[in-house]
Structure formats: C-alpha cells, structure tokens
Image 1 (tube, one colour):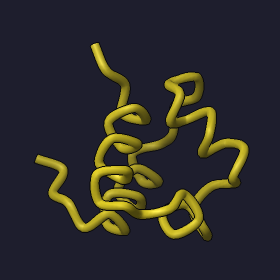
Image 2 (cartoon, one colour; image 1 turned 90 degrees about the vertical axis):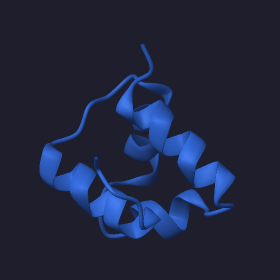
Image 3 (cartoon, helix red, strand yellow; image 1 turned 90 degrees about the horizontal axis):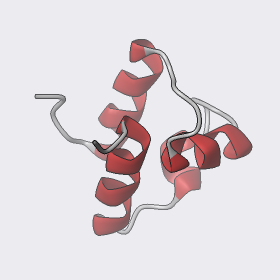
Image 4 (spheres, one colour; image 1 turned 135 degrees about the vertical axis):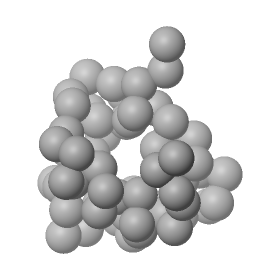
Length: 59
C-alpha cells in the first residue's frame, strides 16, 4: 500500500511543483523528504495544509 507521503510526491511531481512550494511554512525540508519516502507520518492538520497547497481534494 502506498503511503500518504508517496502519494503526495506523485501528485506534486505530476503537477511539476517543487517541494519548497508545497512544504514551506508547513514542515521542514528534511521532514518533507522523509515524509515523501514514507518514513515519517504527519498530522491530519498538516496533511490538509499540504493538500490545499497542491490544490487537490482529500476525497
């Protein structure tokens, strides 16, 4: 099963959006890298902020 971080990375890359654009003001660069690898989890509040920056629905 794919992790939220891996899914976010796929969406981000398909939209050609940088990590900096998505994660600035939300989580640190190092944490973002680990999140996208599926190594670290984040809270639902932070996930909502990231999804909003990607302009996608959580459904």
